[in-house]
Length: 181
Image (cartoon, rainbow, N blue to C red; front, side, top):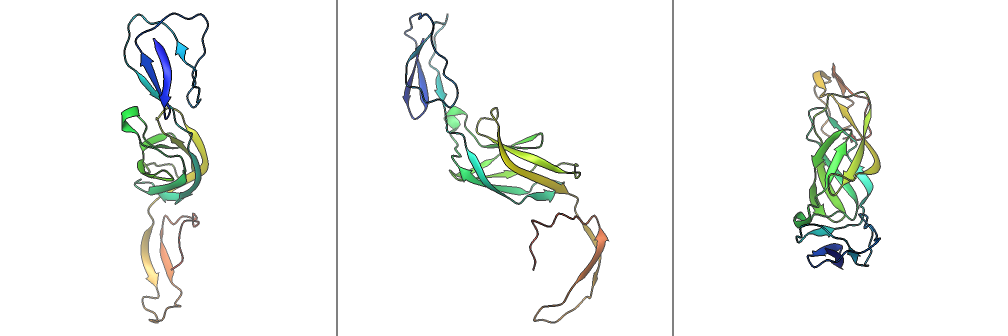
């Protein structure tokens, strides 16, 4: 069997093969153009697609509800989706793997899975094949849904400026993703 690069990261197998002593390995991500020969008992037409490793510049928001479903917008570069080669964006939040939605080469969206862990933050990793993971350098924190039981005062000036006091349970000290209104 003869493997050769046919362009755009595709390696093609040719069923005409000869045994070669020695040889070289083709690792994922390497852009080798040298032919690699080896012998197998059966032949087939296989292709291998290699891609550039994506990198992450920003992830928003950095926290969400324990019930899951928070849409993480992940901005960076070299995201891809090529179904014919099994290339799809994936996110791993802690130990939970979810398939992402490809928006464009610099953005994907992943919905967070449910988690009961509110004790700390979970690392976010990215993959294009669900096997090889890249640490994004970002973390995601879960919090319980707050329950409000009272609001004081119950009215205020139409021009704004009234300070409100909220009374309830399960308020979180995670405020970096909240906006002031």
